[in-house]
Image 1 (tube, helix red, strand yellow):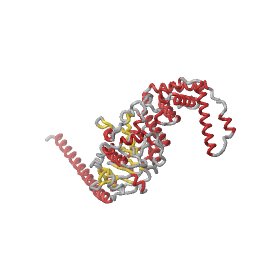
Image 2: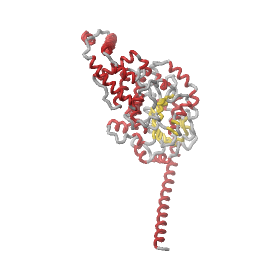
Image 3: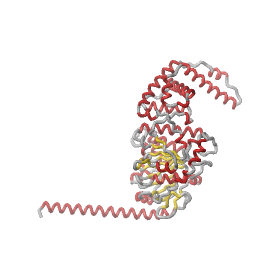
Image 4: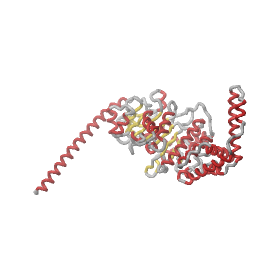
Length: 495
């Protein structure tokens, strides 16, 4: 054997030995973790006493047992176990976290709210095998997903929003297109155009129609706006005075009836400038999204509203604009107590796709804070703990919102996570060594449930519990009927 051959042989044997030692160490480590997790699993599973809802609303099995795991957010709120119905589901791709969310949705859709059928809204952002993730669920419930990538009319009178709310949508569109937000005389000109459009042809109100209305303003329109605004203000003051059994001060009466110091020609000139900016935006990709004539109001009347964002995600600027509109629309409905557009459950699937777009982190944080002490539930799905961090943001408000977002969560369903994500999660909730051992060894469909300071509950969703969605669809047409009695006011309705 030559010296070279001998050297190669010795090197090969040395490599084999090192690989063997490494494998033995890894196998020993895995065995140790598995052993620890098995002991922890046995301990935690045996502690489950049904405090999350018993078997009445089963969504899974307690892992390693045949005990149903029930999950009743309403009961936990009533018992003071949680402060708000905010749920985060963490799990990697194909971990069955969406199956779990659908099980939670089923429970929520079976719950009565103020004697009315419950409703839910879902953000769908994932496509599997060419089909949006929530399409099948929508089919079972006999509802039509709302295609958010198609052009629509964001200022239709059918939404019931105020002139100011609609004007904010126009302003968002203009600034997103790279132009200055209308202020001062330009804001005044926009308001004149809005009043003219909604007064004279409300059925045709749209962004393109508004742009043309700006272009065609005349002196009579400006004077009519001033008169109507003064009349509205005077009527409001008189109503206030009547309730206080007092008369309107003469000085205020004179102020209202004064001649306007706004030059109509200046307003018309400003209107033309806003028109040119808006028209340039409408010619681009952002503008085309909002240049439609179709209202999406009917899509929001359904029992389950699935907002299909899957084909819009390649355009983050458009997503930010559309989401801002949807948020304003739903907030407006809440302020008016308009039951047609109010929901008891809000689900955000694969939130990591949205949280770094625009001001979404801040808005999500605000949403979570606003639902405390209400019967509304927010369910957020994402892959990892670090998805909730706005990495690299220069905005201190965004960073603060993302840092505190998980701190306001009441319930965690934790699928398998890496050590880095567990470390981040540990900053928000208390995890024992046993619980961490379970998390790092979980397989598909397995989650550890942390509810407040209670011990974690290991669950297994592999026996699927969401097959009975079809039964809910039987009552869907009845819901549509009740909602068609539009704009029902009911103070007893729990928001």
